[in-house]
Image 1 (cartoon, rainbow, N blue to C red):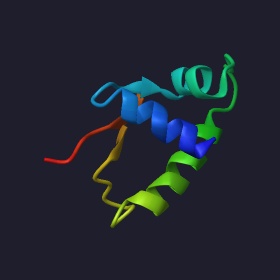
Image 2: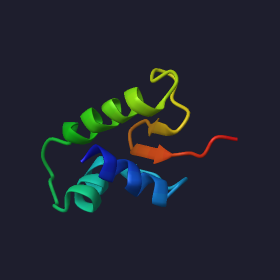
Image 3: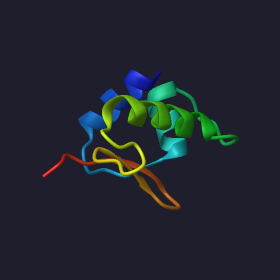
Image 4: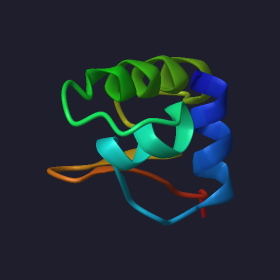
Length: 73
């Protein structure tokens, strides 16, 4: 599902999504419990596409909210 997550974020640059929203939109279900699944997939994606995953250029964490894809520049 990591690539589906990336594709979804790429289609919505600049839009912030909560973990629950990402689970619903990418995984296809409403899951009010553990949202760590999203975090694990984002971590893996960053390791694949970022030069420095600790200082991401593309997939940013919005603290207390979720994630956003930002185009560089």
